[in-house]
Image 1: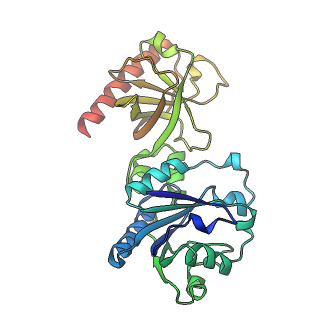
Image 2: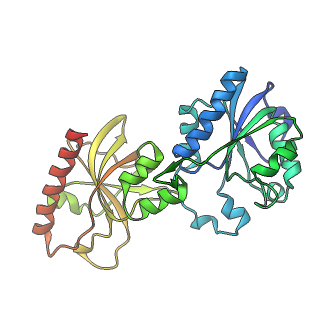
Image 3: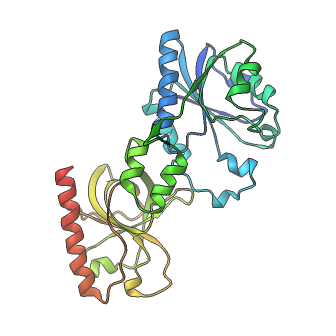
Length: 313
């Protein structure tokens, strides 16, 4: 997949030649609804014997259009993760548009001319709620008039489950209460976080359940506090684990939220290593225990539950 960054005003010489079918959206999470848009675009590209191009933005639109502070935005999928998923879904070209002041102030007609016609699109595919400026004047209904018959506009209806739209908002709500099962079902794959192994208090080692402490990327949304069955990709291996997102309040009040994972049947020293955590099941909520022995007993049960879950799944 060819990745091209477009920063307004962009250099037209960066653009590959040849017509494309262009799929548009921010695609945070690349959930099943987004996948339906990309699959529809891919089907069109194959039918027309042209390449499939996808265009996304470098930052969340709320930062530029609603004044949300960048540090307050958490993503379901970082740009790197989205890139990997676009490639998995067979995109030939990925355009990443920088949402700078020039692009924010651009009118819808100019945007269509430069970022659709200018990218050699013979068909543009997007979900029903896609906008490219102010919602009232830059929506899928008005896109037909802006297209001026230079490309076909293909609107993909919302994908629904239980009569409710599959959306990034729904997935965020599920993660906010630790409902990994629902989040994964809506995504169509297991939710993931990336990070690096850092030094912790080594309290787990003292309890007989050594853990790796993971510093998750600042822009990534983590599930709610709780205990989870996970798979961890680390040093070229995939390892089963039981993860704890919490504050370790058994050992004191007012502690920061941390992510600690007890890796099953794994004992390498991995400080500084990059990891990818795939979330499979919420085992239980966090509980403040009266002492170490009560916690150890619960950890033994958590390990049994984790092993049983993966044996059955």
